[in-house]
Length: 94
Image (cartoon, rainbow, N blue to C red; front, side, top):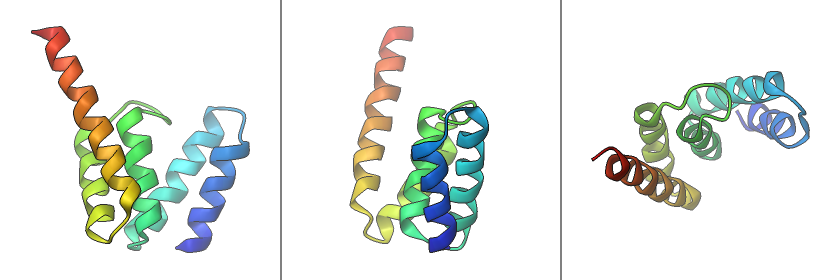
C-alpha cells in the first residue's frame, strides 16, 4: 500500500495532465482500500476537490473520516476545507 501511495504522489507531483491525475487517483484508491491512512487522506482530497474528475464530497468525507480515525492529522484540515466549501455553496444558493 505504501508503494502504491508513493507512486501516486509521483504522478500527482510530476504529472503534467489529466491522465496523470487519474492515475494518481487510482493508486491512492488502491492504497486507501488497503487501509493506508495517508492514501485515504489523499483520496479524500482528490474527491473533495475534483482533482481527477467530478468532485464527490460524500465519498471524500467517508475516506477523510477513515484517515482521521487512524490519526492522519491532514484529514481534519481537508474535512474543514470541505465543510467550509459546502457551507459557502449552500449560502450562494440560498
